[in-house]
Length: 262
Length: 138
Image (cartoon, rainbow over all chains, first blue to last red; front, side):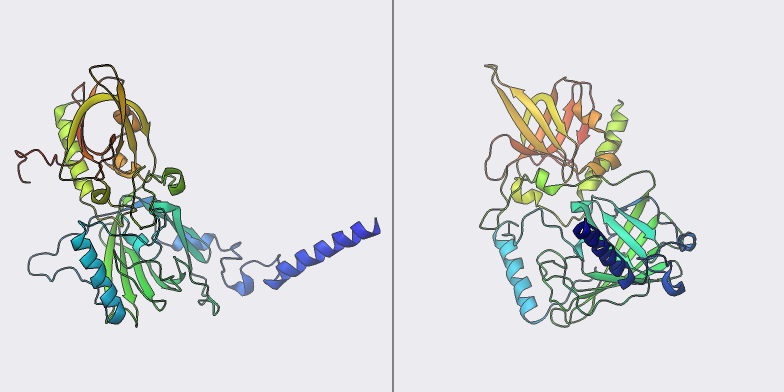
């Protein structure tokens, strides 16, 4: 009896310490500041955010108008240029079939998840945070809008760490800490120093059009910042579907990195 | 279903194929998009899933032997965008004429759907038949 009572007290003490460590369980909107960890009391403020409801489907980029420059291409440098050119040569010499580094079930992560057509995305607003769900590979990412910085001890991931702020109806996002396994585009590798800035906003004249203006900077891989804009069209009444790649991996990649048919 | 509606759907589907995709796999890498195979059968199964819908078509030869063709097609969201439901693809057990790009490595019974024409006249065009030399430029 004595031992179990001590255990119960011990567990309670641990639980209290855990919550006290983040400022106390009973406190909401810590210090008056909205935080993703303390959302209570801040839900009404979400109503002042723009209406990004429904799901958004990537639209085909329009060809540049006559007289306008062609779509921007990234300008690689150093070993990253060499790697890209080697990849392009492989594509040319093998009818477009190039060995893969990862399985076909590996999600693209940042930034290519922004360019994945055919599977819609949706944005969820909660206090201090915007969460984007991408149907493709069921990817999701968190964009923290509660004023926090990137952590000093950031563990890289395929989505990186994103912080954002609202400028009127525009969400401005800064992402770092992206694993080098991801690509900027097909065959385009980046370094661990990649930094991605996004400006996400509805079209001024058409609320059912959303644009994400992406700027990619990489002091090791890119000779200059690389800009891409993705345009999405709203579907109000759709919802996202499952995408369980492992359940439907009909194109397993063999040891040579080549996709096979099952 | 009127042929006009089929025509509208055809246009919508063709437009979808032109979308850029960070491909989880390459259609052209696995299927020979320069060739097509044609056959008739009945739809025995529809996998209405991501990343791609799959349609299984039972083809019976003159001796009564049944081969099951497994055919890949668009993601569900794109079928929906074109106004197609699982029921539309399932058909009703009546014959369907299939045009498909065959597997690049020669694997039998695998293809990527180019066209489906159902016995009731509904025609869904997902791409251009590479063997159709009479296709007008658009």
